[in-house]
Image 1 (cartoon, rainbow, N blue to C red):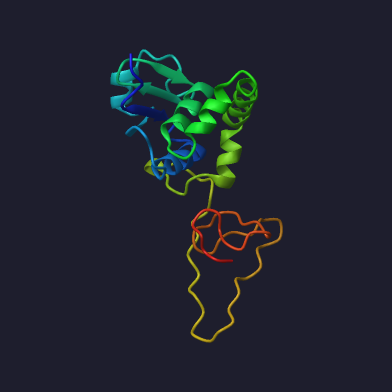
Image 2: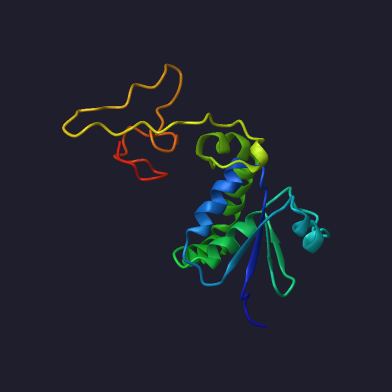
Length: 180
């Protein structure tokens, strides 16, 4: 038996963090093609309706009928990438597998809260309210010394281009790369 030649990633389309992770994974160079399928979609229920974790956890399936869920699915996603395949082997080894599982379970159980901070700005069918719409602030006129206004008290600074939270120590937005 050979390894998978294609993987289907089933994710919770209503979870901002899940959508953000999908966007990240779509941007990675991969060894095998990845198909992304919203767990709540009719196609997912038709093809994978017998999988008990469908919609409740990250699920990855291959064309040969193998299915991974939870932390195992996370490691399979890393395995598919060119940059992180070596990490998938490390994290699935005896020494780090328990740590990887605890990390994934922590993120999974807190994904709604984490998604409010780092989640995707897109929203299926307009049901999300985790982040306000942010109108990009125009750049200063030539020769101007424009600076973004300070954030309202009690709120974190946000990127003027994409609305992602900013860290004072970073020179650019971690999401879109816009200079601070």
